[in-house]
Length: 183
Image (cartoon, rainbow, N blue to C red; front, top):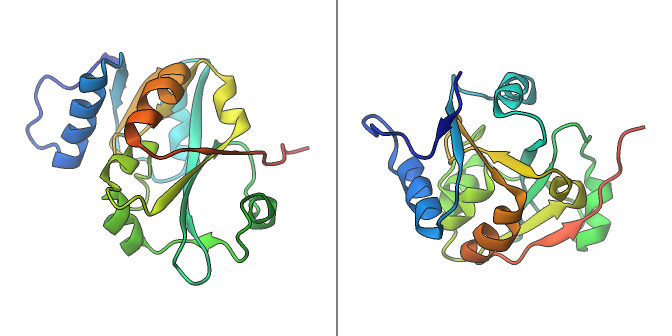
C-alpha cells in the first residue's frame, strides 16, 4: 500500500460514485492523499490502512442509523476505538430506538453499500434525508480519513478542510455529539 497524491491517473474500472468523489474534492480545491487496498470490511482491516495513512489521522467508524419507524436517518462519525451504545446517542439527538439502517436505505440515500460508508456519501443525498452526527473527538486530530464511497480506497485530508469546506459543500449541517470514551 502506497500513499498517492490526489485522484488516480487511470480511472478505468473505477465506479462512477468514486470518480464523483474525486470531482467533488477537486472542485473544492481540497488537497488529499489516496491509498488503494483490498476491500476493508471491518475496523480490524482498517488498522493497516490507518498505519499507511500516517499518524494524526482520525479513521472513523461511520454508522448509518435510523429510528424504529425508519423515517429518520443518521450518519454518525465516531473514532474507531470508541464503543457504540445506542442509549448514549439516543438521548442527545432525542430519538429513541436507534438501530442500524437497512442496506437498501444506505444505497437509496447515500449510493453506498455496507462497508463503504463515508461522510462523502452525503453528496448523493439530494433529498437531505440523512442527519450528519459527529462525535467531538473526531475533530481532535489534524487529519481525517475516509472511503471515497467504495471500500477499496481510502482518502486523507485535513480535518479543517472537512469542517470548513467539505461539510458546508455537502449541505448537511452537522450535529456534534459526545460519546463516552472507553475506560
